[in-house]
Length: 597
Image (cartoon, rainbow, N blue to C red; front, top):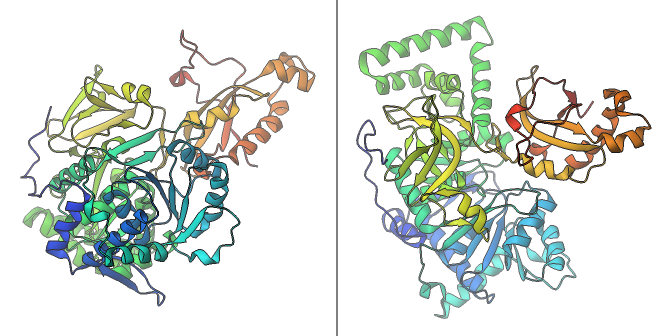
């Protein structure tokens, strides 16, 4: 089913064949307009024009070719959001190399596994990771070059045989090549249907899956997104979410190149409010946790006294009156006037929050909208480049994931008596498959439709509502994906734990999400360790042993994946006939013990 009624006409947007054409077309129209703003040494936002960005990209591309790398070679990219990251990504992909973006928050072991699978010949990274990749280059001989994104290569003392460069050196190489008329970049022809990026799921099982996306799929994804939501060259996007993730990379970087929008790079989350104000940001892509944090701060300022509470409720009432008599768009303008002090605190221009990664609480969206901000929720998955649905500027529902991506075929499989089925999609935005994993690729599709693993339904107005997740993946409020199996595998050889199931849990006192493990101990071993029969073993005997093991394994994984609570079962968990634990039958009311006391 391809949805056609979007409440009002879709916006007119030009399609782009590949990343080169996308940037060239933008330079034709907006070439002398500035974007890619970041703080200079005087702590002032400074940008470069799209033409300058393209020139830097071309120089860097020919600099990479000067290292004797060949088209389709893999190149890893790891660092904070920055102009250097963006330039590197564009140079790699527009030169027909394959980029491997890596999460800079991963543990060394997790990075090692991704490198071992993807086999990058060169690595662009922030200086903070140079030592790690130098160590990996001793382990993996396919790594030939390391390029520092933010520091001179001469500042590193290395006895490694690896060639270590910095960005300036590679740019200079490329400039010389182009000056002499020996450009390889200019002769490259992009095939937009080949993989251009491999996005790896973070994992510790040794087999993280690499999502293969093409320039065709990403360009088409941007095309569909812009048909739903109005994005143009007047918008200033503050880049906050990590660029290694498909969400920010497509929706907060490549989309802005497509539209000629301005990009501002945040310095840190601590400076978020300051950067919004200093950069005069109009738009921010967020995850629910970030949106909730901002809303909480604003709400505290509006409710800390009787006067501010009266001010807010009176202002909201006046706004509602104008919503009714002159329409919500005019009402929004009135709200922005009434709550001008709030908007001034954010630089006056902040207008739109686009949230993805997990569901936003409807009350958060309604509160921010009551102040004159706009909040639109979207839905996506890395395997689909990643955008699949969004609420529209003037047609939205806060409790929905949004309307289907235009020109894509959506189906709902295994629909239950409540009309809820697995969301499946077929279209140009869908990935090629998982890198070197034909079995996983085959399992991800049914009759040509990609199976999202999310269950939901489409209402009669065309809004997708997500009810539950088929997969075991836990999605945190800040958009991080936690794969329980990646944690559980750490306990495969445990002498104290026989069965473990990892699930999400909400702390009663704080209402914060955290990770809880449900454990069936290995009583055969524990009887020997404790010198007691199973019937005599109590929780008090087990707690120190289990705590110690969890603490040890927690150090091997990223902080957001760590177990913070556990429950002990004295009965084996219920299993299927194929001996798989039935997760949905786990008793979540078992007593919880904190790991850290």
